[in-house]
Image 1: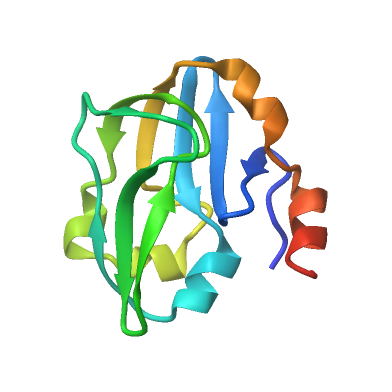
Image 2: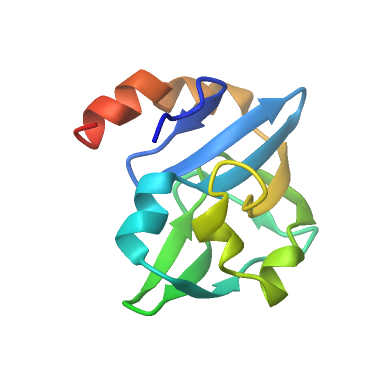
Length: 126
């Protein structure tokens, strides 16, 4: 799997796509493949404030329940409601239609702490 160059990545296997002052957050292809078949996603509601490194929800697979950690600080502005009835979208499109939440960025300078696609691929041994 090639990791998109326009995303920034965390060591906890989340990604963020920054467009203006909005960050779209998801989990990486590596994360979904490690989890296996995803059966449930627990996400915060719009208006929730999240902090970089703090849990923003969880993903339940046939193997385990895993926390999702916020790659950036901000306020949730949108939630991918499609995941409620179709959580397997995270397995099918982890870097696209399987996004989790959109946030209004609270501290854009935090992006410098995240990995590029090449750094992330080296981190996971890809």
